[in-house]
Image (cartoon, rainbow, N blue to C red; front, side):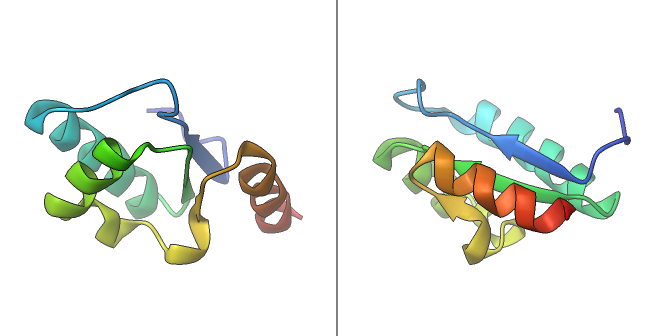
Length: 83
């Protein structure tokens, strides 16, 4: 995994739903990113995706201040983090 970044933006806005396997893969990506000292921003998750991530405990890794509906808000947050 590349580690030359400070923030990872995950944007599943075009994904209507996810299954258990996808949820586990996202959990691995998110936890690896956090363990490497970077931050995760989740944006644009639809209700089904958000609920699956919540039900499987994946959202425990993402700070509430880093979850957004709109891309512009997520990008502004990312800019705050890196500056």
